[in-house]
Image (cartoon, rainbow, N blue to C red; front, side):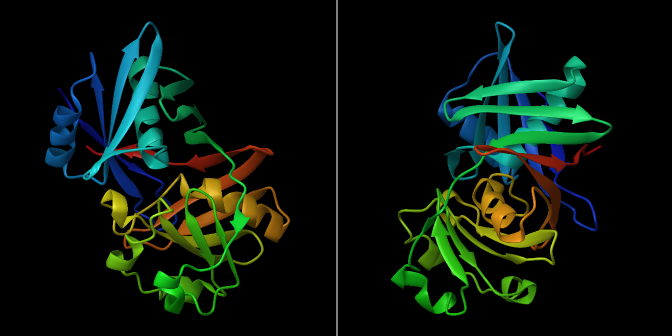
Length: 250
């Protein structure tokens, strides 16, 4: 079995987020998939099988299986599009379908758009969000901060974040001028202290910033240690598309 590594969501001095991609003849046991993931030592490994002409995908972090992984989907899409000489690929999973396409060297990834619900800052982290402009929740808890610098200087606390039982992850974000936004993404409950570049976070963030900035097309920078960069567009009330790079490591 050959596991390829793709760097996803790079560009504009951002290195992006690495993921492993392994196509299998059949599904292995969960324990075998976890072992391969652990040996790969990458933030996420995507496993793909082809069955009756359809592609199926599962994503694993070092702590086990996860759902709707954007960069893992895009890396797997780049691998399958290259191998089978396709223009696009549709992955099926138990969490829904994900479509990846390639045009003029740029990959697109269609994702759902999630409507946020206004909420209070949980008491466990109230002192970390005293300057919040907005707080809302989807699958994730989102804290909107007043500036790029406040996002960059935000101090995470894994132990307290793990106590946020209702939420998959914590996201902090701020506007970046009139045409974009920045973010950081923390998911210690699934073994990711701070993610490097997160596609699925845009399901929560893009609808908010489309409305806040009165635009259907924005540029996104993730202020992680390696940095992430991609574009995001609104294509319907219930869906968005990411535009990004995915590069195979040699």
